[in-house]
Structures are given as C-alpha cells and as structure tokens.
Image (cartoon, rainbow, N blue to C red; front, side):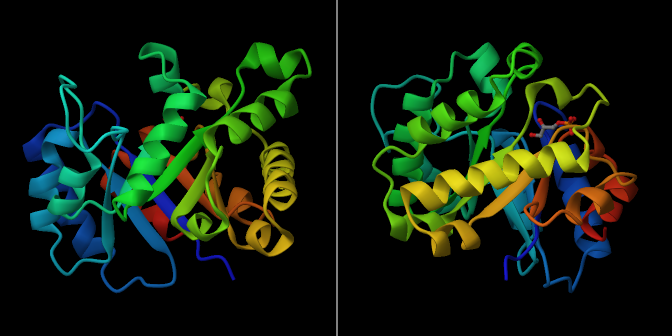
Amino acid sequence: MRKPIIAGNWKMYKSVKESVDFAKQLNEKLKGIVDREIVIAPTFLAASSVIDALRFSNIRVATQDAHWENEGAYTSGISPAFLKELGVKFAILGHSEKRQYDNETDERVNRKLKNVLRNDLKAIVCVGETLQERESGKTENIIESQVKGCFEGIGLGDLSNIVIAYEPVWAIGTGKNATPEQANEVHAFIRGLIAKKYNAEAAGNIRLQYGGSVKPENIKQLMAQPDIDGALVGGASLKIDSFEALVKF
Ligand code: 13P
C-alpha cells in the first residue's frame, strides 16, 4: 500500500512570520492524521522557525531545492547537510520553475538528488512537459528523458526515499489541470519506466504525486486514479481552509 502524500509548495509566498502562523494553524486543523503524509515547503528562510513551531507534529517540512554539495564556495547555495541539522525532511528538486528561471537541468537534479539522499533526506523529484511538447506528441519522450537523467546512478535501495511529482508545465498556476485520466496515463507511464529500470516491486512501491492546479474541487477525482498517490500543490496550499480540504480529500 502506498501512503498518500499531500504537499504544499509555497514557492516565494509567505514571509517567515506568515509561514509560522500558517503552520501553527495548520497543525491545529490536521492533528492526529496519520493515514497520509503531510508536507509543507515554505521559503528557506522560514524552515527553521516552522520546524520549531511544528515540534511533535505530523506535518513534515520540505525545502524547495538543495545543493549537490554539503559545503563549499557556492554563494547562495543551500546545503542539505545544514537542512538535515535543522530537521528538514524533504527537498523538492527539479521544479519546473527552477528549470525555467534558474536553468535547472536533469544532470544537476541528479547530483542534487544523490546528495540529498546521502544526507538522509527524502526527495520529491519533479518532471513534466510543456504545452508545446504535449501538443507535438512528445510527452512520453520528455518524461522518459527527465526520469532517465534524474535517476542516473540511483540505486534500488534509494527509491523508498524518493517521490516523483508529475507536474505538466501547462497546468501549473494556470487553473487548467490535467484531467484525472490524462494525469494517470503519465503516472502509469512513469511507473513503467521505474519497472524497466529497477523492477516491478519498486515500481509498485514508489509514490507518484500529481501537481498542477490541484484544488479542493478536483483532488478527490485525481486521488481516485490508480496511479496517483498524492498531490503537490501550489496556489491552493496557501489558504488554511483550502489546504485542510486538500489533506482531508
Ligand atoms: P499550482 O497548484 O499553483 O498550479 O502549482 C503547482 C506547483 O507548481 C506545485 O509545485
């Protein structure tokens, strides 16, 4: 059984104070929920204070990136070793906004993923095609090459610490979500890639999140799909009632 995982990616929203206030309110609303994993990814700046505010909570804290080295002359770099020390549990890697604005590549995601895992953190690895790629029938090629690049040299034993998020770029922040069937089709394809590279058991165990305009109104239908195990949510994770509804889908 794959435990559902609902994650809120707050992107560059919510100041430190707002993040802490929000996390505290969320904690009250989501107390005692153990049949699904709940993750929030605030700004790096707030990771420490949010973790303090969530002591003994069932809500886990993620960051929105992490470096491929633990230390060094990398101005502005965020070391996974430092994140580990704070109590961060997950790092989101390869988000399409990082790919678009910060020239993130599969090769870099792969190096980051290896270092995140070495530091005993879990990773949410994002993949997804653009509208143009979808319309020209290249979705599967793109997803395959992203998965291949990101998972280069990743061992079977590491898969339990990795979640893959399928986030079609055309559905992010556009209000235009993939239909549950469209999303599930790509998820099933990704599971097939994992089966081919590793084995059927690993493919059956790895958790796959969908992201892109997930809202309280559509999460139930998405989660009802056989290959969708969770959601990575941007906009709709920024309001208490909405995030509560998403977690309690
Ligand atoms: P939206 O939910 O705002 O479409 O964002 C999705 C996303 O990018 C989550 O990482």
